Length: 145
Image (cartoon, rainbow, N blue to C red; front, side, top):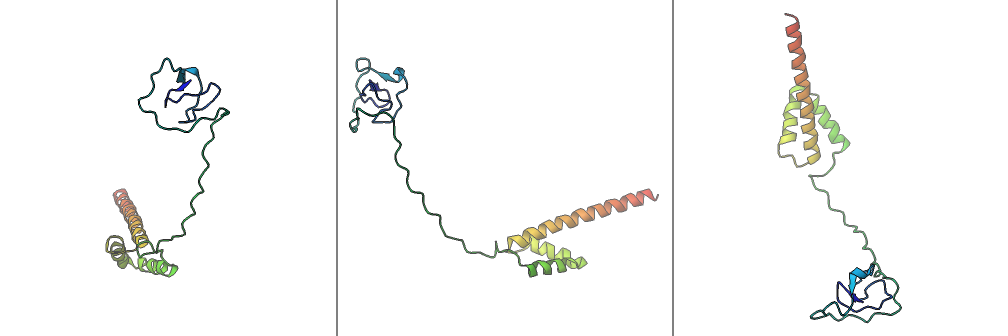
């Protein structure tokens, strides 16, 4: 038989081509030497063992060791401390100062992404609360007429 993929001549009892590893599953995958023209330039391949019975995969490489590199923390991804968080909550308890500071923290040149995102989410909650308050006042005003 001749391997249909690489053109190497094979013994009849093999299950895989020794040159390219193509499995020999049916006679349609291979042709006889009389029906197939020889390839123009066949690559040099090692001789096939007549006792070959199954394809053996190459040995696995050792896995690479996990890297112990930890990127340094910058001001952008530094988590807020409990003291910073409590101070921000205290500032947000003051009525007009809270809006000024939330806008400065949320949309200013604040390098800490945690504080910036917290201030933006707090502003969203303030806007939702103000919207509900205005809606309730309008409903109460319309209901009293």
